Structures are given as C-alpha cells and as structure tokens.
Length: 153
Image 1 (cartoon, rainbow, N blue to C red):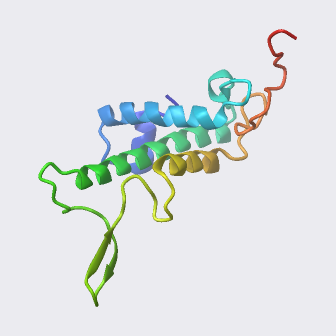
Image 2 (image 1 turned 90 degrees about the vertical axis):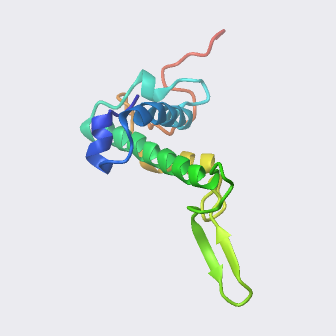
C-alpha cells in the first residue's frame, strides 16, 4: 500500500472505515501500478519508490485520492442498486419542467461519459505527472527502464 489510514484521515477526515480503506487502498495501488509500469514490466513504485519528500507525498496523496473516488463510486452504486429497486438516493444530473424528465447519474461513468476505470486512471496520471522515482525516472515513463537489459541480449 502506498498510503496509510492515518494519511487518508489527515487528508479527508471521516467517512471511510479502516477496513474499507485497506480494501480500497489495495485497489488504488493496483491502479497506480498500472499507470507506472513501463513496457518492460518494471513496477517503478515497487522497484524505486520516490525518496524525496515531494515525490513521496505525491504518491501518498494519489493513493488517498483514488481511495476517496473508489469509496464515493461504491456509495453511489449502493444507492442505485437498492434491494427494493427504488431510485431514491440516486444523483440527479438534470431536471426538465415542461414534459417532466429527470436524468440520473450513472455510477460507472463521470458527467462527461468517461468510464469509472478511465476516470481513476486519469486521476492517477494527473497526480503522478512530473514525479520521478528514486532514480529520477519519471513514474509515468512507459519505455524500457534505464539500466535494464532485456532477456536474451
């Protein structure tokens, strides 16, 4: 995990329980690994976690932001998928008065129609942009990790 429950509480306060955090932080870590693993399969966060204060803080904040977005998405989904089948609790995105019409937010997308996974990936990319690992390699660099030799060469 790239952040602790205490890191999360300091940034976002109450809402997420420690058990929820543990589960969601693991998922957030997988998203972060996906956006920081290059073509050669080197997981930069695992292999060379940033050691400078700014880089380490950016990684923690990214993890916490992803946990918050995952938790919010789950809460939205739970409102949409109530056992009794009602729509109470859904997020209204538009209401038309003439011929009555109500539009609800979809839990698997953003207002712009982006998928949940796309939104989470974009969030991680935005928060980790410009951050280097402990060797100075940008976390979002997708090429062969400098100093790595491909097998068979």
